[in-house]
Length: 286
Length: 305
Image (cartoon, rainbow over the protein chains, first blue to last red):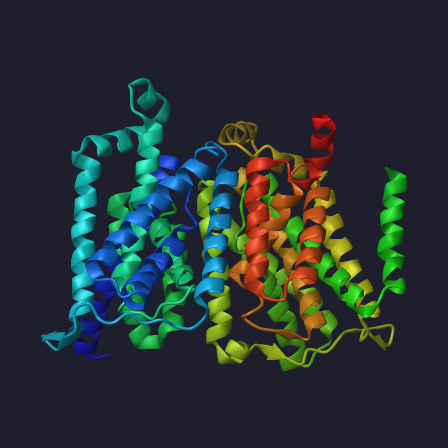
């Protein structure tokens, strides 16, 4: 592999990685507060992309309006799911996880029925290609990565600098004590799930013009997100960011060297290595 | 209770003789799914959710397929090897993840199921996207089990083997030790009296995967075909749905869940998406409204009256 190709793989990997981080961070946040891994997360991502197609391409809404509608809808969906399923089942982790699998199945099978299996395409938000140091990259991907990076930074600030973030960390540390000290844990939980859903939908909306869209696209994303939270350590924001970038790079360089499917296997291999050497994840607490 | 068991045994043994071929097919699929679901149920009882069981089933099925078509060996050798391969894979991932919280296990097994499928799809020597076709049916006492009726009895034998194995395992010291692992506190208690709980859990998972591998091999020879489109995430979730809908209260739960939903699925829906939609709606309804599953329905009705 030449140096130029390696550099190309590295850049694409970083861009993909930060987008993975956006989706996986929602998972980690929700896990910290509601103590479940949300299997429906990939479907939210898929519906984010699908929503842009339906509103922007099929119905002809201007992009900002479509984007705002998708984000508002995903937030509302998150709050609704928390109220209807996660709250009544709190404390029963098995039922919670299985319920999220059920929600994911409903969302995905309904999408196959409604949207069909035909691949859908969204025209470019920002056409053009930049070239520097022998690396070519679509402006689109840079835009998506820039937005994702800003959001990840914003999220970090939210968790560490705001009252809401303090409440989230308090609940994660010890929910009972937090409640006694007056933290409204129900409200924090629904806000967190809403936020997680919004991030996943935004991830989907950002990549809508980059990939073709179909109802099955959530599965690969959720697979990568799960591997990322295992490698990074569940509940750790820094670990998720680190693992997301790592996996993005590993996958894209692996794909250049051995092909896309072999790259997925390579990523799984990385997960196994981490499980052997550092089972709690790079930044996880044991 | 013994009379009820006798009736069930007689029905299982004799009913296919009296029914049309299509009903025999449904009975075969029900038995196959019931055997898989028992393994999923076994893990759920311990508090471990396996969302990649199809990956272990696929290991068994592909072992059988490759042994009988590529090597040209007797199907029985493949059927004998399949549980070893699947069991070893289960033991491996189990030993890595059972020291961690349960959710790590669920996520890793999910990832494993997807990767197994991706590997079979990616490697041409393992069949690639098209899979492996042309599996022979095994022969018993010189008779190839070609008809649905003859194959039904092989499937019945395999299902009984898987079911009895895991049922008996529950009654051993090992099985009782496993039931102490449902909460973190109980697990710490078990560890304090010297039970190496992660090792126990890894072996339990290996046993469930071995059962899945055995039935996977029998399944493959029934279909005469294996391919990446069969052993998908949706298959894994179906099994979890069967177990949860049937109820985790006793061994009858996964059997009832698998039987009712498989028969329903085979009868009503030809399009996969509608099937998983209906399964998922039933699942959510059961979780929210009838936490004990179908198993608890008679009791619930009695109390309501």
